[in-house]
Structures are given as structure tokens and as C-alpha cells.
Length: 74
Image (cartoon, rainbow, N blue to C red; front, top):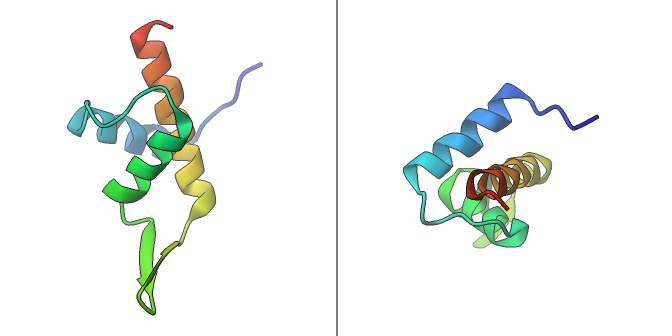
């Protein structure tokens, strides 16, 4: 049995990959930073950058990583 992702997570991850194909790769930590950089999931409070929706960012980055690995064929 595999994990079933919500349609919103899949849609956001695939849209980010389609708009920025050279920004993503098969590494989760790199993809997580790119997701936070390219979306509004990170906010600034008192001059400090904070992740507002950490779990959502992790899920999007995880699906993007899996999508890129599957797309690359490894």
C-alpha cells in the first residue's frame, strides 16, 4: 500500500515543477527550501522568516521529490 496524497498537494507540487523545472531534483531538503522560496508558506514576523505551514510544505516537497524521481526514472 502506498501513500495517498490530497489533490491540492499534488496540484501545487506539479505546478511548481512545471513552472520551475530546473529548480527541483530528487533531494528532499533541497526541494523543501525551493517550495518555501517559491510559495507563500513562509512569512516574516518581527524581521525573522518563519514557516507558517510546516506540515504542508513538507508534504508538497515530499511529493515533488517523489515525482522528480519517478519522472527521471531512478
